[in-house]
Amino acid sequence: MSVNRLVPNKRIDLLIKAFNKLNLPLIIIGDGPERLKLKKISNSNIKFLRKISDKEVENYLSRCKAFVYAGIEDFGIAPVEAMASGAPVIAYGRGGILDTVNCLNQKNRKKVKTGLLFKNQTSQDIFDTISWFEDKKLWSKFNPETLNEYSQNFSVEKFLSKIDFSINKAWEIFKKNHS
Image 1 (cartoon, one colour):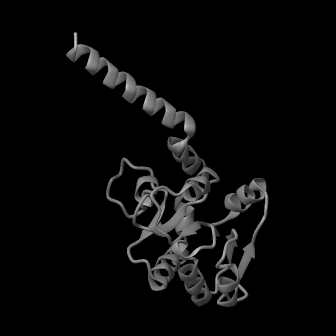
Image 2 (tube, one colour):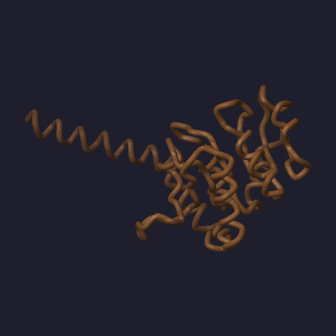
Image 3 (cartoon, rainbow, N blue to C red):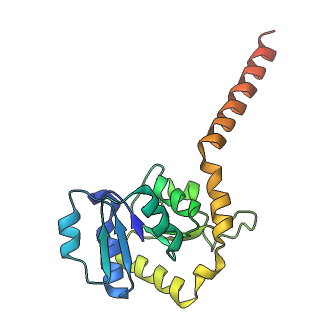
C-alpha cells in the first residue's frame, strides 16, 4: 500500500507500472492532480482511496504486508507512520528515507531493520524488490511491535528531548568558555 499526494514527484506511476506487472494488490491512499492519469494506467489489482479518515488509514497500514514509496523527500512522514502501524517500508533508497528506514540487507547488526530499499528509481527495480520480498516471504522477518517501537525515535517528544539536550549542552560549553 502507499499513502501519498498524487503529484509527479511522488512517482506513483512507477509503483503502478511495477504492480501492473506483478499483478499483486496495491492500495493507493491519497488525492491530487495526477489521480485521473494514474487511474487510467492502473490495472484492476490497483485500488484508489481518497478522503478517508486517519483511523481508516491507520487500519489499512496495520494490515498491509508493506508500505511502498518511490519518491524522494527531505523527510517523509508517511513511511514513519507506516512503521508506527507495524508495516515495513519498501522505498527508493535516496533522500530522507535513508534517515528513517534501515534496510534488511544492511550489514550493521546494531540497527533495527525496518524495510527494503531499492537502488534505482525505476519500475523494474520496484518490481524486482517486491518480487524478492514476496518470493522470500520477507514480511515475516519484520515484527510489527519492533517497527512501532523504532518509529518512536521520530516522535515529537523525542525530537524535543534531543533539541533540549543539544541546547543545554551548547549553553554549558558557552558558559564554560566565557567565564
